[in-house]
Amino acid sequence: MAPDPAAVAARVRAEDSELTRYCAAIVREHAEKAGWSKRQRNDVTRSLRLLQALRAAPTAKVRATDVLQLRQYSGNIASTLDVLAAAGLLIEDRPSGLERYFAAKTATLPQAMKDQLEVWLQVLTEGSSQAPRQKPRTPQTIRAHILGIEPVVHGWAEAGLESFAEVTRAHVTAALAGTGGRRHIAGNGLKSLFTTLKGRRLIFADPTRGMKASPRPPPSRSPSTPP
Figure 1 (tube, rainbow, N blue to C red):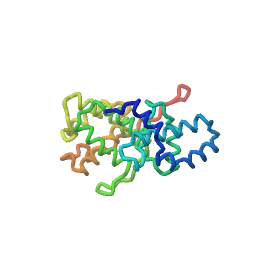
Figure 2 (cartoon, rainbow, N blue to C red):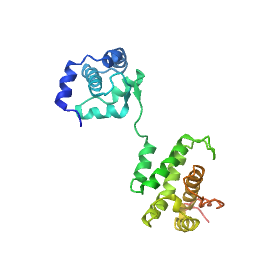
Figure 3 (cartoon, rainbow, N blue to C red):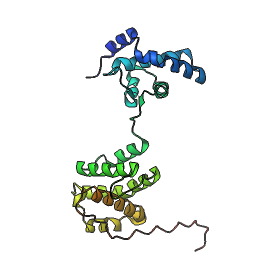
Figure 4 (cartoon, rainbow, N blue to C red):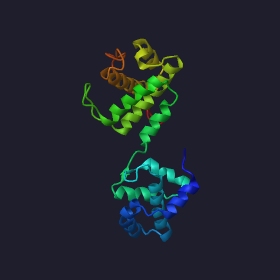
């Protein structure tokens, strides 16, 4: 159950917390450097008291997602995050832009597919020391892979497939034939996905094994450029 706002407010008014005292010098330093008003400084101190009142473990570090919950109590979010980070007390657990992008693109897929795609995303972002070894990919490359495979995997899900273990070479060939100008990024994304899933033994066979890389589309010509 969510804490009762009235009870939280009463506790905050009476709270002289370790968190507030520990961060007091950092709050003063930030206020002086950034030119905070007295109101903003007091808002940050109140937000720290709110966090102390809401935390299940008073001595634990503070998760960024918990700080975001202060909105419902009119807490100060951005400045409180800055103070906690400077104090070494912040656990950054907010989803990255890439993670939010990935979640939006995979939200309606069958659970088995989502689980397999999450393994793939982890390998792409963090790299892998186990076979097949892989260095972390750039966010731009990962976005391109997700963009390339999105219509393909949604098409498979709509056709009734529940897991990538069910995908055959025929599925891949047919899907790539329908991608048009996106064939290059779709093919690269699928090869990356199935190589990872095979390496992690989440599928029995890699349906893209031995397939040649899809050629890049020719650069588009401007209307004034002669053929």
